[in-house]
Image 1 (cartoon, rainbow, N blue to C red):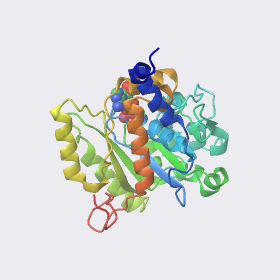
Image 2: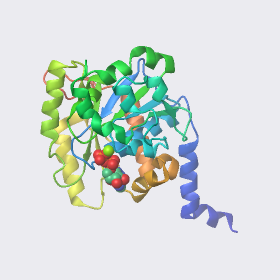
Image 3: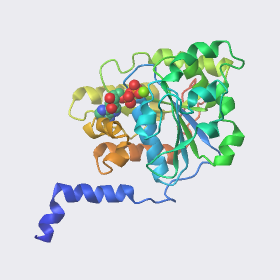
Length: 310
Ligand SMILES: Nc1ncnc2c1ncn2[C@@H]1O[C@H](COP(=O)(O)OP(=O)(O)O)[C@@H](O)[C@H]1O
Ligand SMILES: [Mg+2]
């Protein structure tokens, strides 16, 4: 076959992109000084929380960072996407929260890369909102389980917690266990619906339960570049939230939605796809720019450090 012709086929181009993505470059992202603990939250369902949790985690892990995903949604979709076992009876975030096992005991390694770990969720977690109510330190059970000794022992660079789409005790546990919140916002009608409520809740948790909690990034998801609407929503979100919004957006892509059906992240399922590359770029952006802390007048919302042209 004509070599030139072969090189120009879409398959060849995709293969080249995939090879680029999958060639690990352990030194290409900065390792945080201490574990960055992040929860992906938005009480609206279907905005891309789980998809973002697992694919950002995979993107960071692919660059040699050691990442733990904690699945705190009884649906267990993050566990599925990471290929973690999560049938009833498997040690999971449920047993960990109610004190029946340690975080180390519930830990599973993802099939994707040796740097990616998961504490899975099983359906047992569904009852935990009620069970937790009467427990001591009910808001801090996760924080206690993911203690510094555990994190140091395993050398995790990132812990990413996937939240259920509600603001109950599970989400509160996630928000006391982390410093950073990343909010995925779907570039669609009603994008900001519920976000005001989420901000109020984060402010309340900052005041009463975890003074370190803040929004370190906002990620626009399911962005359809062919529509005017997506662009409008993106502009609106950027105007409203400023530099905390990531420059990289995640396109709407069939590959992204297909991947979990194969127990994979999109980075594994189709590493050369637009969705995979977008998540990889967003992961890089998060790692390279570091934590965005709030300023005096920005409430719980992070801002680019001074001097950074955002
Ligand atoms: N970028 C994307 N392109 C296409 N489909 C997506 C994308 N991100 C998420 N989805 C799909 O949208 C649905 C909701 O996403 P999910 O991550 O489960 O949201 P949440 O965790 O907020 O409920 C899922 O079926 C998922 O596969
Ligand atoms: Mg989810």
